[in-house]
Length: 356
Image (cartoon, rainbow, N blue to C red):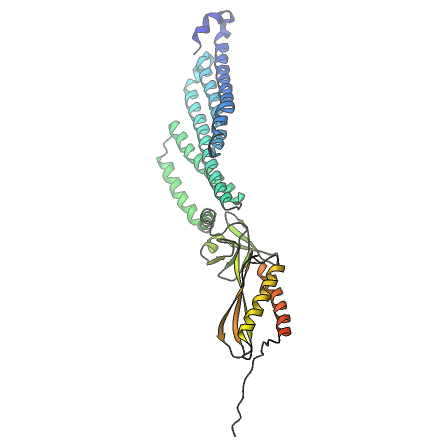
């Protein structure tokens, strides 16, 4: 590459070609330094002006592999210049090919992980939730393994090794491993579905069809953790959770209706009952932090019961767990006000007729 320097290095005698090879390597290092400066000062500044930060992350991910590839190229061309390496020329080309494939595979894996991580975090920010870092970590490791496996097959081909039988063996082995790890893989893909499709999110309060209720603490590659109100943890395999009917009390919003059932005796004035009940509900809403302010509570009569005329009082709470305190305060206040207004809530009554 630097043959034009040969006349100027003649005074070095037998060491001239070694110095020339060293200069070739230094030239590639300088080129790498220049590219690094260009990326940091100009390319990074240019992509920072775009609306998305994905291009910034991709540039950052490929910078080191590019510099490493330039260093390998420097070593390769330097070895080509050195006569001492002539006996090893048959090994230099395959070695350079193998190392180059590894560097390219590293760059591809880094870019794929950046794209997947950015996409997952971007969706998480839109939902104001945090995606499980553990799940992303496992996904990234799987990507590294997959890219490395493809690179290994490619490298064996470059080395002249027949890979047809190897690929067939790996295919059969992969099927056997997949069958052995079927439950684990089912949990993994179910976790991936929940991460991407978002039927539940970290922090949501959910109820399963089996009756368990709690906050979603984490969605990992194998299981999902629910923290129940007693501060205990329920660990559910992702495959089981994906097949369950789930009530998400935080979706589409945390606010929800609160329905309190009540009943008054048949002798009660229903207009008065409705008026008094709504007044009590408004007062409880005003005093309770968990209630949705500004919501107008209302009463709906629903049936003639055995002992009472039954009705429902409808209010709104900020989130599911707020209903417990609001119901508690409302029942206390309503009982006190009914006693004051002489509104009766009857016990179960049976009329018995005696035959003569």
